[in-house]
Image (tube, rainbow, N blue to C red):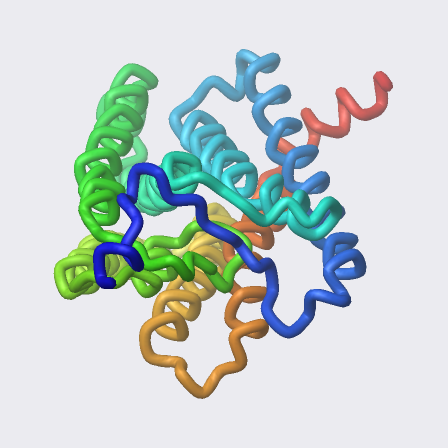
Length: 312
């Protein structure tokens, strides 16, 4: 009987329910989802286009901003298209291979984005604490190498996740109460022992979020100390202004990420539809807000965007 109830993971087809309890409102929910997605693509592709066209913006700060834009595009595109297929066409089925691929890429890009935020904090540290050596320490070639390191670290951390899931047996009931294949959401419907999956996902959360946040906070402690030593009030405000955009992006990215992780593991009292909506907003809202934040706070980028907008 046990053998009858188990299906080899390689041939499994899962069902993504969308947002449990709100199935009747899927069409209405899809409207803000699709609007946010379009704005995220428009904003991030605008950043990539403007930085690519303007030679004056080919600096480490803007190259890192392009990496952030690519990460945001990757994160939202890993989740939203499938969610809209569920909302609009009721296409809820997904193969095991498709599920593992989606899970791999969305977690991969999340880890890459976290590393890019750390690199951006280091960029601000060098710009404020060692301005005379900025071009020496952070050349464009080094930024490219740093981007490669971010990708390699993410691959090494995330690759075990689909491998760990692929070894698990899945029962006849393969319904995932979510809009996308999140690692623990898939693991929880397995008939096997998922202790290793739980432990490894917590290790990744600690390594990526805790350590990356610690490095960012340490960078800003040193930056703040350097700013407080500046005697000129005008220079004081200018130095603070260069960090404001990055701090806002950190808050929007890590706050939603931490909330999603904690509620998924410890928030049993939170309604499932609330958790799933917030988990989706984690992939969407930062992707919408980041180009706006940098566009508003960075005069040079704002002017260049305005120049190309006026030509249209």
